[in-house]
Length: 259
Image (cartoon, rainbow, N blue to C red; front, side, top):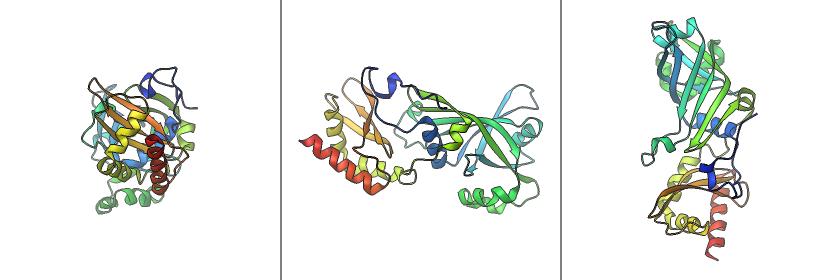
């Protein structure tokens, strides 16, 4: 079960109705599907009891297991052989115009155990094709991080723990592969419409409104006024699982706002 509690930062005052949004488990799986590398935390053998972090490209299997290709020469591999407990921090790709603490991120906690290369090789090379140049070296092997719990942060004040079963059963949002292009297109070509939607939601003196995330249930805006910058979540009129459906939903919302 996910501890998805409403947050003061998620959508205004507690008295305001909550806008539909994918669960923390779904958002965590979506973030993992969008990214391809993270920061791996292991327990140091050189300095017992101390954490050691390193860069870790990864892939995933269908159950949400995280596949790591590790070298015997790497410090984190020596650490994992002594103690397989590990965590992996993955953050949302940075568009370059947002505060780092406003980006989504997830920390996965579990144990990174050895896994048969035949089960991991194709999936890993699909995500990291350049690894074909070293994947078969004798000092390289695969490990699979089985997620016991995940801690998801959706931005300022939006956070919660996700149990391992909920994480494994969740699936990435259907817009995961199209979301980046949708966000870029809307911000570049429809900024006036975003400002209109922000004003229609009750925000006065909107100077700028930019889409930061989109999923099948709605989207997030970052709205700037003369006094502050705030986040805003707006729902689609109906679930939108394709870019075409998102376009139709946005057109409907803008038409309604103009009335």
